[in-house]
Length: 210
Image (tube, rainbow, N blue to C red; front, side, top):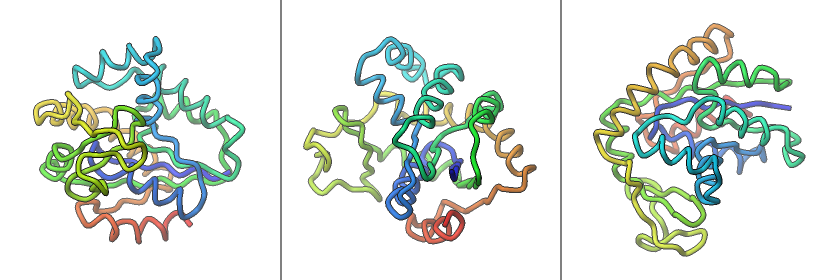
């Protein structure tokens, strides 16, 4: 089974590129963001805890993320391979992932400047019903402010403010750069300039993961 890991700060385009990989190669995308939104939507006990952290611009605790990802990776509907979007984010999560075997592993780091990240996230809108995310700059819905997938009105997240975005970036750099260095040390990390057009970045990613 092949494992593809996408790294990048919030707004780097990980979700968009993961969708493209899934469509092109039929690997299953596992997004921690999607898993989190599913729990929040269900209003589960985990979902309520997640909301408390997110509203303060804080990352969800490792133990919650690791449990959700492991359950998904080991599910019966994943056979050929999978893409991890937003995981592992800390060295503890790396340890949690290390017990899950993979025949081949490719890690891709999408580097983006802070001003680009802020601009992208401030332009982000999402569907509270199905969780699909759009962007008024480069991932525009077919109908203005309407979800392509389920027809629900799109909204902005309460925590998508400039102050909270910058706080997320600080947390991301502090916790995730050691993880990136870990994979760099393993020799399987590839770094791309993701400030560029999404399709340009995709052409390079396609060659790396095929």
